[in-house]
Image (tube, rainbow, N blue to C red; front, side, top):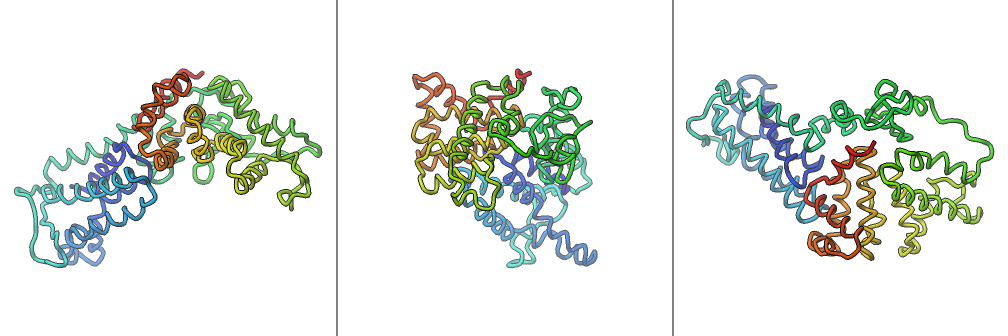
Length: 410
């Protein structure tokens, strides 16, 4: 088959997998086109291409090296994700070998360099000019883009996830209003998180979108600024109508936790090492430093963990590891984990399946089968815990239960 057909097939395999994430999709695509590395012999002339094509790339030893490299790369994943990655990379590499044995018109020297003479192929071995190859190249060039609305990703994420998000947003529902002109939009400023349309947003380095206010540079700070003034400015988005309409309970929860953390920081004597080299004014960045310091000394400090969790949500981060110990102590905390995943999905388009994958793997290493635990919690008498467990089960199996809720948010 043609190289682009192999690449498309590898991408589709990686994207359709239940454990799919960006790293796995890139590895599957790379494994599917890796055998064509021997086509580089063309750089040394047509004679060398004829001599080495379908040799050092199209053989089982290169496949073994590829699979071993994938096993090492995914070594820190859970056992299930690790085995899935190895199997899918092997399948993608094998897909290239098997299809070329039937659809390339060339013999494959699968045992090269141990045996440089014996070739392998399926009879009849159709030439590249055969109509079936042109049909397949059309199918697998279109399939990744046709599946993009379902999975929410396209091959552009290989270049940049931000570029992929921007392009796909052109075809998604515009469920927000631009902070500059009020027009419908579905992008956010990555600095202040306010909605911004592409007419007013500036796309900068690494495809970062910034609104006109943030693009103009930071505003001059007031000479005197109290905690409440600072909170109004920093938590303005959490307190505005759009965020409250998404989840009023969770918006209030974030506000309370971050406010309490900032006031806790303000109570720390200015002689403490935490303030060294600073202006002595409480900020959320210093709150994060304080909470990390507190957890280093007292790992059981629950309030510090909640503050770190709230700050991760505020920054649209998918790192919810701060509250994993709290979930293990009381599974009712799954409610807040699910609320954070939905919040990030509705407001920033962060895939909740990917966002919670790390937390699920970490929790699974402690409780064993997380699926069994969640299945038991589905019958929990507490309504919120029961609902959160059901949504976690969906997310654990690669299903996004929030897509309908995104459409319902104004």
